[in-house]
Length: 248
Ligand code: ADP
Image (cartoon, rainbow, N blue to C red; front, top):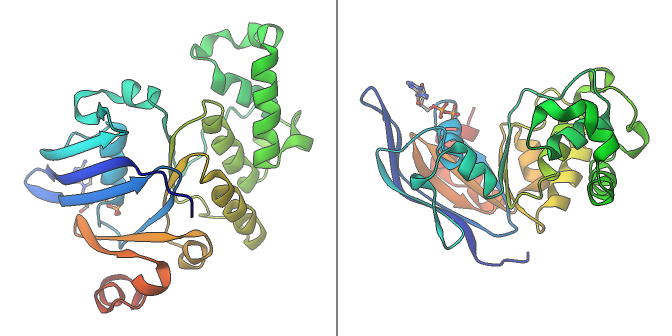
């Protein structure tokens, strides 16, 4: 594992919704270039944690830092996104009528209303980035295919590709293999492990077979805090983890 020091810190972060503590003194450090899996039972606070990192939810207490300089609690969602934090939600948000190429092109444009003039104006630099990203996500041959007729897996990869267009430093990925075939899951494992190193990747996932296949370090959330953290083979033997999550 190549480690370059921390890129994201959450320190003693607490969030309540109407008096209910969804996140309680959460501490998390993600290293630059690492691939981290976050697991935990429903209601553990995984989604809320992602919402805090992207600025969608404000903590009541604690600190959240990105890199050495950026206090994320002083920034709004677009500002945080512009630092290079990309989030992929479970549900794809590709533009169905547009081709793979056009979706990637659009992902690069700050102003989404300019599509009709985009292809004509897209620079060589952007084109070569699109080529690079299409290779990474394995959709080079499907470049002219409308997103609407891609398979479920291909749509998910396209969406990851759309995030990659901006060269993010941290990718947050929510349940990437939900609904995928075995083969699509294997391809997704290759994709995500390949991305780590160039950027940090944080994956929230329920499929333990998939987590086992990609994770170096796993963080187990429970009741809004870190219950255990370490290598999957160690964490999965932790009696507390077995009890709250893996025991079923
Ligand atoms: P997970 O993603 O691990 O399933 P969540 O982060 O979605 O967990 O939820 C953590 C807890 O916080 C749950 O008990 C959930 O019901 C609660 N919660 C999350 N968002 C809200 C909200 N906007 N209002 C009230 N309660 C919420």
